[in-house]
Image (cartoon, rainbow over all chains, first blue to last red; front, side, top):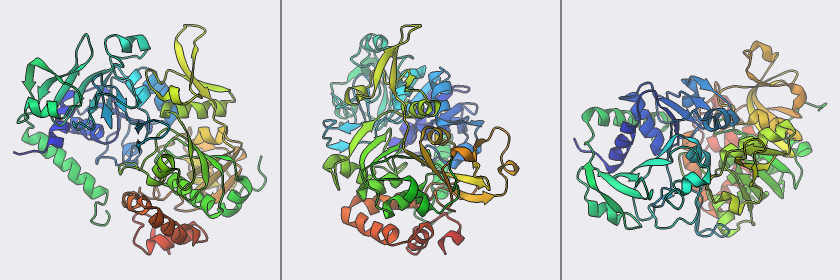
Length: 259
Length: 297
């Protein structure tokens, strides 16, 4: 069965979640992966969205972080101040699952500006919930497509902290949690070196070459000597993901003119 | 507090929002007070400081029509679609006028409204660790916890001149019921000096509809209640209508180009008398997908 790079990324990200884990979910790719996990191997995963929905079980993927779909089947719906104070800052989140516009070798994230802050070349949406998710969850996973534009040598702006300058910089900063323990892309999986905290390519997806990953990275990417190849998506995973996307498209009207 | 609780949206915006005010239209993807945003544009309010966690279409419109000089926010985009182009044009190219920005995170904005509602001077949180935001925003500072010595972020309380929200129901006494994703609406109303609430429906007694512990704003904390069915479109009102995702997608093309945007706003907002008129106008172009038909007649 053939599959797309995005399907590879989403399925590999989904596999990381386990039953019972509490996951604070970003919109977009993280949300697709988290819900795929819930619909396959981790039915009891607890999905929290920053709109205040705890234990969300959307039947289709939300287009926005606060779709009614999220509230309808949630265990609890709380206010936005409460979700950030009691649930995130209170230390109840196992995994913060984030997307990003740009990332650097220490897994710091930029979602604010490209170019100088005062006169940006490109104004991005901004921080949203990410700075506190990145510094409060027990660990953080990041999922994004890997290109030279997104994997950059130097960020113009650090919106949310990864390992900052590397080494023990994160620890010294006062950030809680282990920080980004995995970056899942359409080409492979990167994890931080235990000492330097620089991202290392530790797994590649089937059919992807190491040179291809290096070419899509804006710095000289380190490759693990124990590099593994991820398991190809199963038919069941692909069927579930495609069904989820098809339901989502129908529910959101697509171009077909409404539901 | 207010004597004339019920009014038309036109009257409420006229009497409660003034040029130069700080105004917070809140609603976290749900219950976004779009109709009130249109009315602010129709009445050509100027020099506003706009406050909102998630500036999206409603602020894209006000910014593009030249109503705002300053924006306080934590995430600006068209959820699930991409950029909001009038916001970007204002920041990147100062069109139609320069827009000063003050940028925070969601957790912080929520905490600032809470501090404002609590009558406290500042909000405190474990935030912005390792982020560059404090370098560019002098309102984000750090203090040492007097008990543990931990370094914590603090920011000034938010007390907008006017809070504007949309809710499902109000009763004859002006008590307001909000259900579903409740966002920061309670906090923003309690933090603000004045408030406007647009509602889907006026009922006799809110107690017939609200379960115990529901989010109910007692009428005496609200300045004005306006009956504006559909007033949260293209966002949604839980129990009334769904999010109009097609409209959000369509907005991308409408707002991308300055002239297209201006022509669209002139026709559908400036060229209509009220929100019902707006609905009829855009429905005629097939642009409304989820509002009950009676709103668009």
